[in-house]
Image 1 (cartoon, helix red, strand yellow):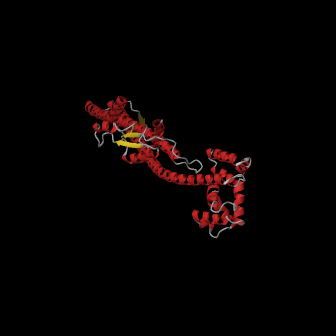
Image 2 (cartoon, one colour):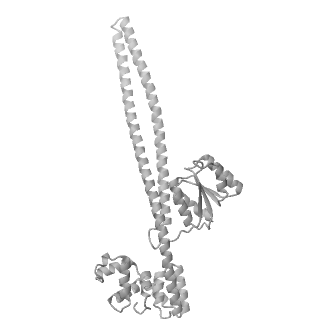
Image 3 (cartoon, one colour):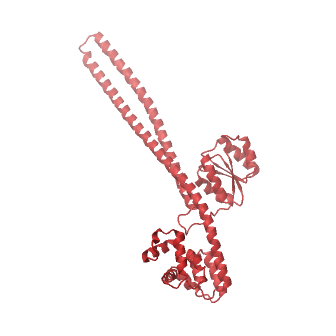
Length: 379
């Protein structure tokens, strides 16, 4: 470590060792006062300064590097000259083993000044590219995280509405059952009383009781009609419950797609972080319909895929007649089936078939559905 050319310790430490490992080592061995509160830049600077000297810190770093990259160092040691060393470096970079290969090559006895300068330059530029990519991924991650939270909130509210509808329906069923029981008991009492009195009262009393029975019967018929009406309302409530269940299922699927998109755009670990693998090669995608809050995020997503997103609201504020003019400037058309009019869909299909232009129907207006078709549009 301390025998490297002055100034190159910075790139070796920054490339070949993780900051978390350096901080834990500094705290555990008491290398620097207040090491746990130093920011990343300060901690890196302390190690780089001390790595230039054959001392305690330099030997600790040497041990960490040899332990971390032992297998690659052993593989590179079989290189007999600078040409073989250069080929070994290129193969390691292809596999993504930049950190281990950089340490193994920079400390190899066959390394000459030309290859040394080349390796330093390549690692230096990778650090710039990684920083630029990381900033874009953080913005996309924030956008998709907000969309995921919105979907989760919609799902929670929909579930509460469904539970309230089911509770209300069950209460109405209980009330109707009670009313029916009362009506049946009243009819039974009236019939029994009529039979009992018919043998001991005169004709006028029988007629009066008969009228009472008829009145009770009419009431029973009215209550049965009311029960039928309530039954109809109950059926409608059951249909509404099924609709809510279907909506819940759709929301769950949309949430899962957003989560998958989130992992595709912004992986959780640094080792799997990579640029988006879709290249639209400057294609212009016309997005018809959708929600205003989603369109701006979709534009940024398409731009990150080296494309351009045009938008037509499907007839809400822009006329459908304007759609043909907008479509003439596009290479492909997409539209979310849950947030666009049938008139706009028919117009898109007719115009695209006339111009032999590709179009895709998105399952929903969420970003996850757009991510699913970008690969097809890029090919």
